[in-house]
Length: 544
Ligand code: PEP
Ligand code: MG
Image (cartoon, rainbow, N blue to C red):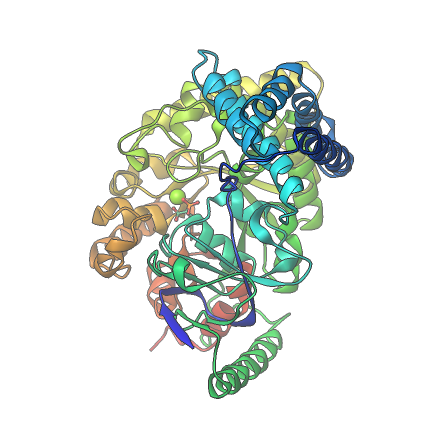
């Protein structure tokens, strides 16, 4: 048995087989062949399989994400059949007498380098596509499973790290647990694991990848951040017991469903849920959240290979609003940048992405993108109780600019005879120390504040939330953070705004009492933490 330790980011136990996540690249060795014709036939067969698969993916995408998004798979099919691409592969097989796998890999590298060197951002992005289709062909040549190695059965995914877009694209039904060598507990992968109720251990160090192998039995203990590879009988029995106790505790929490979020002395608080998209609504309803306090709309962008259209966004927002049947739904506008990178935005590489061109800064500099989202949000507003909030605010000027764009959008919609609600609440995230410090000036400009403690912690303590080496320095209860929240609460209330917390700290029940005493009106947490927080609220007596 091998014991590996990291940091547990979602407390639960998973027992199952390991699947090592292999990113797009499939390592291919140069190997010689003698029968050139047989090799060319092998290539043609793999190509035909690839075209068939891409056709199936296109059909699935057409149904699930609409024609605009499905188109990329038509382009992939065209790339597979491209004459230059095919000639290069055949040429390499014939002249160098090497395997088709190698010929495809070399061609992929050459074509990707050629695309990457082009001026045009759209063409540069094609480098990833040519690698993608080539890997699919190589997989069909070698009969390796799908990307990510997620097979028919449920598995424990072990990876160096997972980008948010990779995490969202995994088939959640098949993931028992995540284990990553890097990452930090506030990274979006960790947040997603919590949203999806999946035990996860991060920051194990890269040696972990040498200690795990596909198909090996393992246990992930998300409470202690431990992974047992090839566990002995004793460990299996102990972990199964822990898993049973866990299930019993979770059942007990479910008994809190339908109960009010009220303290013993009668103080009510809203407990809402954080989501990444319509797919999380099931968890929100199951856990009886009173609304949605944070819809991270950027996931609509991360899941796509091009800008989601107004129509696509409208459909997603409408679906969430309708599913919540009149309960509050706060949708945060695009928060791209830092750890949430999207190729098609064509953003420059930055030395300090967390302090860089991100979130509202992108929206204000590229209003054409921002307006599409605002139009979709306003149009969807008639289907429920919408609040819109803006991330990464630092100044009054930004809010003035936002409000001017909002007014433009409203005017355009009116002119086009398109309906929208006149009771949409507009709020801002308090996630920079600047916003908290001048919250007395910002509060009169908005309906509500929502404290993003993940970024507020990062910026207040000067601790990169992505850097696992800094976990020990990251005191999430630091007095500076608590004072900034308290100050924001006081200023919000003095100016008639309400205030919630939607960062991970909202679920920290050791702080619930403090937050309620500060006057926090709403706590928005991962769906799986709603009942835990309700339990904490119901056991408090603030009069003492
Ligand atoms: C936060 O910063 O606390 C927050 C809720 O936003 P995100 O985690 O998406 O950056
Ligand atoms: Mg944030």
